Length: 165
Figure (cartoon, helix red, strand yellow):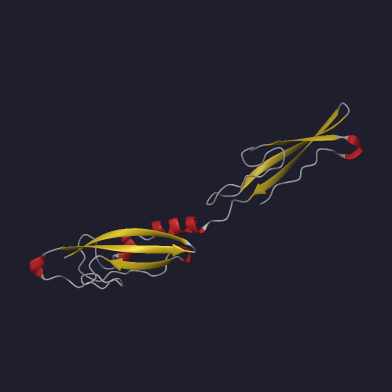
């Protein structure tokens, strides 16, 4: 279910119907549906109709499944940012504190997010991940790589500090 319900309050032959919900935070007794937000899973709710005619009462239970809202571009972008990790870019290097070979800087991330890279010192680590070792006399060189992830109109940046030895 992805929309509000039209719950009858009057039944056949003048009977009245009242409703109860097992999870009012999801489906109110008036039929209003509050879908759980992505990435939640579907939620089952039992709606109980109490049908009254004179002094007689009959109850009938209905199970409905409420589907969560769809992921927004911002949701997908946050997941892509998490997936873009040091491990995913370091290539043959043991970590980013001791880089001595090229990095793998993907241009496409999780959920089809685009990734654009920039480097604070392009002559040492290019925006495509090529590493040019500095002269041994200069020692270790610190470089900040910036990944700009985009999905739809949403954008987020993630930074990686790299030490080229």
